[in-house]
Image (cartoon, rainbow, N blue to C red):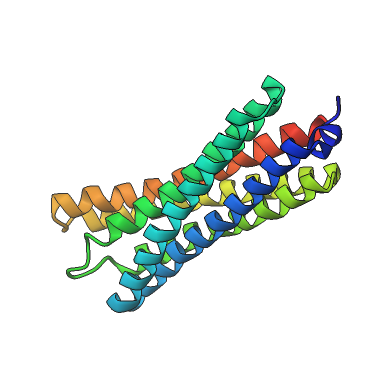
Length: 220
C-alpha cells in the first residue's frame, strides 16, 4: 500500500495532522531560543529572560502535543510500520525542542561578563540554521500530507544542507571556545562547550527528521 493511501485513511491522517501541529510548536520554540541568543549578544537580559520563558513554556506545550500523538497511535489500529514512522517523526522532532531548551538554560548560567561576541555570533549562525531547518521540516510535512513526494525529497535535501553548514560552523565555534577557555573559569568553559554541542545536536536531529520524511516519501 502506498503512503498516499496510508495518509488518506482517517486515523493516520489525523495523526499526521497532529504531527504538523507539533512541528509548528517546535518551530516557535527554536525561534525563541534563537532570539534569546540574539538578546544575549545585545546584553538585553530582560529580553533574554522573556525569550527563555517562552522557550520553557512552549517546549512544555510541544511535549503535551507529543503525548497526544502517541496516545492517538496507541488507541487506533495502525499497521506497525505506519505507527513506527509517526513515532520516529514525533520523538525525533521533539528532541529538537529539547535541545533548544537546553542551550537556553545553559546560556542563562553565564551572564556575568558574558561570552565573547565572536563566539556568540557563531552560535547565532548555528541556531539560525537550526531554525531554518525546522521551518523546512514543517513545510515538508505539509507537502507529505498532500502527497507531493518530489517536493518532500527536495526539502529533505535542504535540511541536510543546513546540517552540513552547522557542522562547519561548529568547528569554527570550537576554535572560539578554545580561545575563551584560555582565560575563563572551568565551569564556564564546560558550559559554553555544551552550548555549542547542543546546537549542533539540534541540527543533527533536524537531519534525522528529514531522513524519516524522505523515507516515507520514497514509499509514495
